[in-house]
Length: 177
Image (tube, rainbow, N blue to C red; front, top):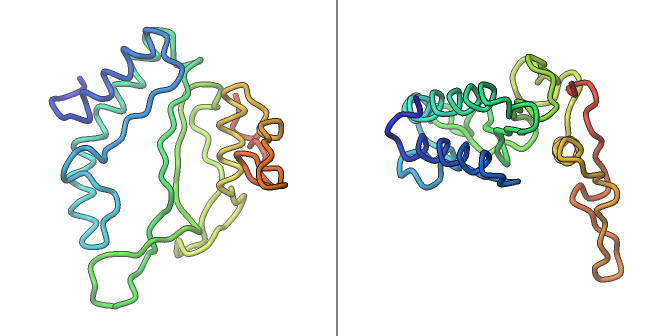
């Protein structure tokens, strides 16, 4: 059940687009008025409302893809551009700040080994712990799973070679099926 939310309808539409042969689909929460991950205030209250809108539709999308035999060839990625600090500069503030050093992403299907957890943060969530994954590594892994070699996606601009993973990145072999 995708539920009645706009996000749920987006997940259902994504499934139908994939069934119709679409090669790339993005479903975002940004068009749902109160579902904005970029919260600096009481994040717990917002996250509680968000999980009620988001968890069931995503689970249903994955279940439907699996039931239709499409999950093995469909990569589902849930990610963001940054995380949240485990603290705020003002001790009595209920929110948290932007944090680019540690955040979680998850992937399902499309060649990812199910149930695999790779990388940790330190005990406070401030810095990387074991097996850190740089954003370039995440991008290289996604591109690899899409059948693209990130090192060959190079273009010349202003006398310099650029690629989608900049000058780094490695596909994380440990999570591949």
